[in-house]
Length: 343
Image (cartoon, rainbow, N blue to C red; front, side, top):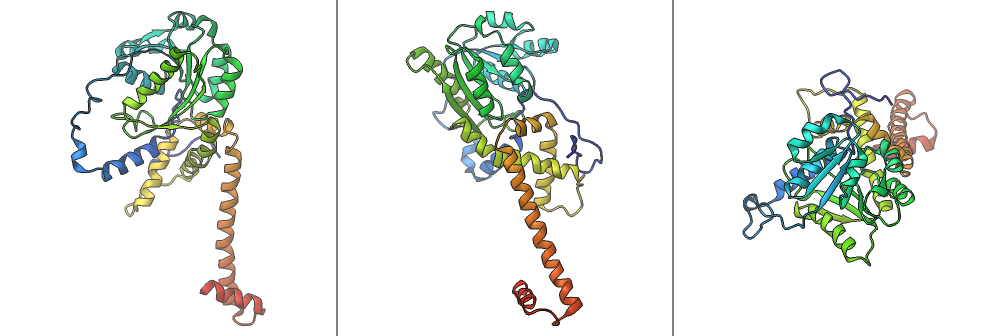
C-alpha cells in the first residue's frame, strides 16, 4: 500500500497533513451528527428553557497546560478558553506564538518555563509517533507532584503503559479519546463521544478527585456523550471500527475512484470516506496500526474475508462456464452443485 491517497475526481495525490493528536473519527462523527439532526424533533433546534449551558458555564475553572499545539491542541485549547479556563501551551515550534495569542492562550517555547507555571492539568496533544519521545524527555519534576496528566491519543493501551512506566507515581493519569475533531466538532460537541479511563487518580485526596472530575465536566458541559471504558477495551473495539475505516478509505483512495454522473448514495459515502481518511497523514494511519496490538489481527481478518468473497465469485463463475462447455455431460456431484447455485 502506498503512502499517498488520491482524491476522487482529481487524479493527483492527496496532500497528507501531519496533525498533532489528529482524531480520525471526524467522518463517523459527522455522519452520526447528521443522523441525530435528522431524527431530532423540530422544536429541539431552539433553546431549551432552563438550559444555561450555552450562556453560562458552571464548570470550576482550571489552569490547563497543552503540550503539542498542532491542529488538535489548538482545537481543544480554544474550547477550554471559551469556558473561562486559563490555558498555557508549549510545542516544538515557535510559529504558534501569534496564533496562541489570538486564541487567548499563553504560549511557551521553552518547556521548562511552561512547567514552572504549574498547570493543574497537563494535556498531551502530541502525535502518536512522537508521544514516547515527548513523555520520556518531559521534565515532570518541574511540575507539582499531584498534577493530573491527560492524553488524547487515538490509541489507548500504548500511552497508558508508557505513562505508568515513565510518569512519577505521585501524578494522576487520565487516558481519554475525544472521538471527534476540528471538522465534526467545529460548531458543537453535542452528542459526540468522549471515551475516558481513570487510570490512576488518588481517590484518597479530595483535591485530586475533584480536579479529575472537573476536567471531565468540561466535556460534559459541551454535551459530549461520556463513555467510561478501559484502554484495553477501547483498542479492541477501535481495531474493528477506527482502523478498518482508515484501511478501507486508503485502499479505495489508492484505486483513484472518481465521481460520476450516476453516483449512488452509497458511492458518495465511499468518496466522502476517501476524502476524510486521506486528509489525515499516513503517519497517523501507521500509528493506528503500530500502536494498537489488535490491528494486525484485524488486517489479517480483512484479507481472509476478501479472499473468501473473491473465491465465491470465481467458484460460481467457473461453474457457469463448465455448464456452458459440458452441459449435462458432467459428474453427478457437479450437476447437483450447479442446481444448488441456481436455486
